[in-house]
Length: 84
Image (cartoon, rainbow, N blue to C red):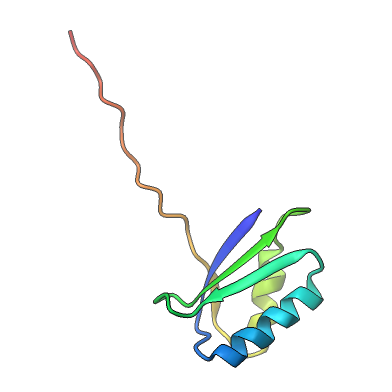
């Protein structure tokens, strides 16, 4: 399972510290930031279980960071309908 979050983390050393905290707090999670993305993306992956998004959000909020789940943006299209 992979969950992607939008954050307000801007400084690399903060991101590194948060990744270490996430790895320590949530055993089995693999986390990384993309601070170059306009949404300051945090990606969290777990092979063993579902991502506990609410606990992760609460953890970062308690530290003063803004974080929200980034919705999937999959383009939706209708299949062509053939009319005879």
